[in-house]
Image 1 (cartoon, one colour):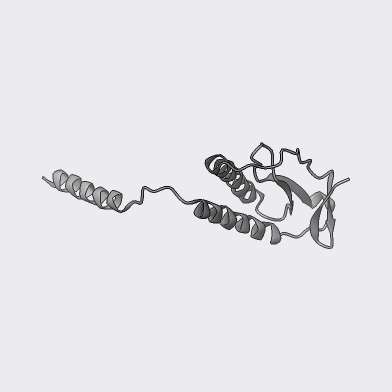
Image 2 (cartoon, helix red, strand yellow):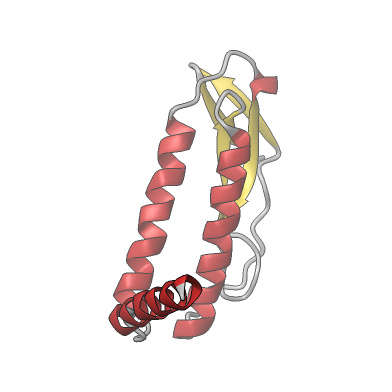
Length: 130
């Protein structure tokens, strides 16, 4: 009897949860807002870092062009939580790729080269493109 009551409670709770779920797809603006919010989080993580030497700097491919490849490269100090940055960038890149496909986004198909080096200038990491 106790098990039956628990099963009924679980079924009722699931019915309430699923009846409140919105099954409509997100609009383009909502998808874009999600990308923008995640980009802001990524920028805050990067901005929290500082460097003392060139070896304290690195870069990561960021974004997803519709034709493939990154939109840019983010330069950052290794003093930040690099694992968290990599996780958020990977999520952003996957979400932007899905956004591009879902909304038929087009882009230039130019291949973007990474920085040739990264340097610590005035406590901030900077990408050098030669």
